[in-house]
Length: 168
Image (tube, rainbow, N blue to C red; front, top):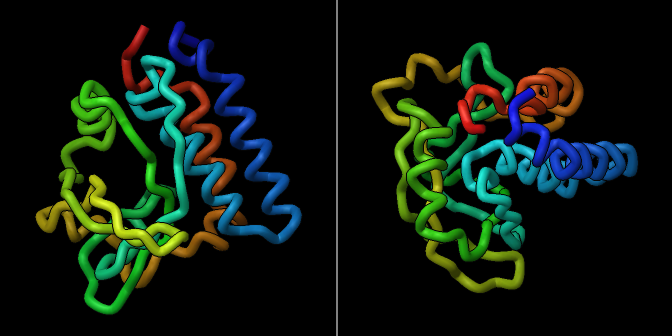
C-alpha cells in the first residue's frame, strides 16, 4: 500500500462504516452520501488531505446510467430526469486537474446548475460521460439499491487502495 493509501485509509473506512450503518437503518440516500465521500477521498482532491464540506443537491436534466463492467454510473443528459447527489463546496483550483485525471478519458467536466436541499441554486462542476463512449453504457438508470446489494463490496475493494492514482 502506498503512502497516500495509508494516509487516507482511516477516513475512507469511516465513510464506508457510516454508509453501512445508514444502509442498515434503511437510509439509502445518506448511505449514498457516505459512499460518495469515500469515492471522493480516492479522487485526487484527497491527495492533499482535502475534506470538503458538502450539501445534498439535485441536478435536473441528467440521469445516471450503468457503465458496463463497472460498479459506478456514467452521467448523461436526459430531459425530464434528475440526479440526486452531493455538492462539494469550495474545492481549491488545484484539485481540478487531479480530479480530471482521476475521472479519466470517458468523462468531461461541465459546469451545471444544481438545486440544493434548501432550495438555493448553485453553479457546480460535474463529470458527464462523453457521447463517444455511449456504447459502454447499459440501458436504463443506474440503481443505487442494486449497487448496495451487489456492487458495493467490489466498489469498496477497488477504492480502498487507490494505487491506480500512482501518488506517493
